[in-house]
Image 1 (tube, rainbow, N blue to C red):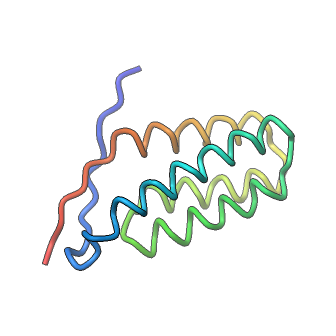
Image 2 (tube, rainbow, N blue to C red):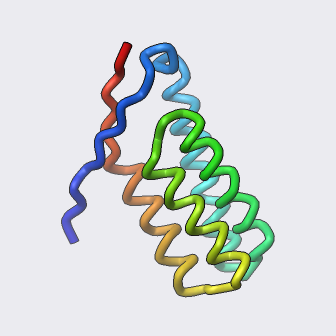
Length: 102
């Protein structure tokens, strides 16, 4: 599967925080994978909610959309869908391109 990068247009006043944003997002991705393995849906709900809020808050709509879907799937304990969404988040974080706007 070839992933077409998503381009997100982010306010230039957030440029200094991008390294920390992505480091934190990758750490949360690791926690999502661990929660999947443990079938810990309450943690997946929380992490999906966090990804939704953080993604939308920073202007990363793709991340926010995935977080929204993950939160809902985890509430319903849909293991297969949760796994698919976590992997979609991994691909998103690995391929997203940021363009800063003023």
